[in-house]
Amino acid sequence: MTTLNLLVIVYGSCSRDPENDERFGAEQRCAEITLNPIIPASAKTLEQKQKWVEGFLQRIGRDMKHTRNWRCEFCKKHTRETVWMNSSWIHLTPPKINSYVHSIRDADKGPCYEQLRGFEAQVALMTGFPPSGPPLPKTQKSYPMSASCIVCNNEASESRKNLKQCGRCELTRYCSIECQREDWKRHKECCKAVKEVKWVWN
Image 1 (tube, rainbow, N blue to C red):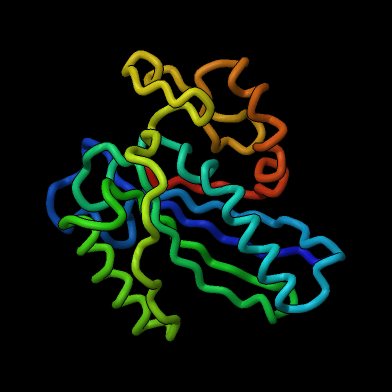
Image 2: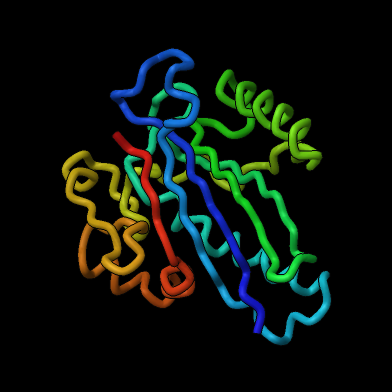
């Protein structure tokens, strides 16, 4: 049995944040989530472990996105997309990954995208990990708002004001018990892997 040490840091902003670079730095608004999923015994080789980990990150992507009333990290407008930047050490014992998730208004064009790419280039210089390639083509015109319920994606302000986080992992947000029950089969993999959540949200 192999346990993955996974740290996911979700970055974003809120309507109260300053319009300048003061919002970045040691107290930048974020959520630090520690997860310890079990890599299945069937994933024996490094390649198999890497493939499983990539699938796990994709499966928890929605959970990480719908954790708060996130605004774009760079412009404070409501965000609909996230960009993941991963630093991976799967060969270690235990294997380790740090994932940096950026809440962004538009992940493939515009000033916020350009700021993110500049940040990514700086991180690549510091860590030695190459920056990601160009964004993948979008599969739909508009993604659900991060601030909405993960199931029904109701964007009405009345719904968004009354969202409640999962009582166990204290992350994924729902507008009703019905939506939470509907999502449990999918959500439980992420929920059971969460070990600690730390919020920087003043």
